[in-house]
Amino acid sequence: MRRYGLLPSALVLAVVVTACNGGGGTGATTTAPPTTSEPATTTAPPTTTEPPETTEPPAAELALTSPAFSEGEDVPVEFSCDGANANPPLEWTGVPEGTEQLALLLEDPDAPGATFVHWVVHGIDRAAGGVGSGEVPEGATEGPNHAGAPGYFGPCPPPGPAHRYIFTLFALGSAPDVDAGTAPQEYRAAFEAVALAEVSLLGMYGVGG
Image (cartoon, rainbow, N blue to C red; front, side):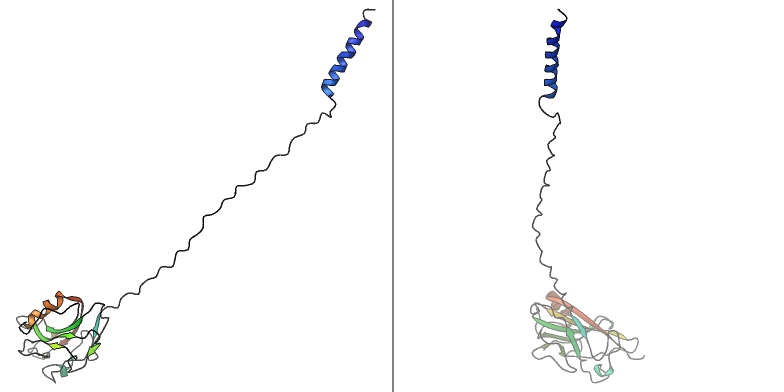
């Protein structure tokens, strides 16, 4: 009789175990779908457009030429003491800003003893583009030469090798410190003291010896 008394306890235990395992559900495990994170939106900083750089064209350089001869060539005889003794035509370009007046010199650095000054002109209008043969620019002043008089004195070397004759154009920022008493050899220094730019043209001239 006592063996049969154990049966109800076994049934109770079975029911309890079943209830714990079954619990009225299906027993399936549900997993929440993964959450997807939206990628962070990055905003590029606004681009600024730089204005294009403007490049100023280079300023033209002061240039001096002659229709009568080219750099390093012989000065035609008509512009010498053996000819008409008239100054050759000259042309120039590239006068710089700030120029008040122009000046000209003609020098022979090969003369015996010292440089011989053949021509001095100052007070030339900055707007002038040149000077014609045998002419003096309007309003300009001619200084003394080493031949002893104001004005042009052409190439006149002694017999022997050709001499160099250098025409120099000066762009002056102000009036040079010269007067009636200035000696021919003093003009170069006076011009250079106030020059903004200068340029030279070389001509050759000689007579056989």
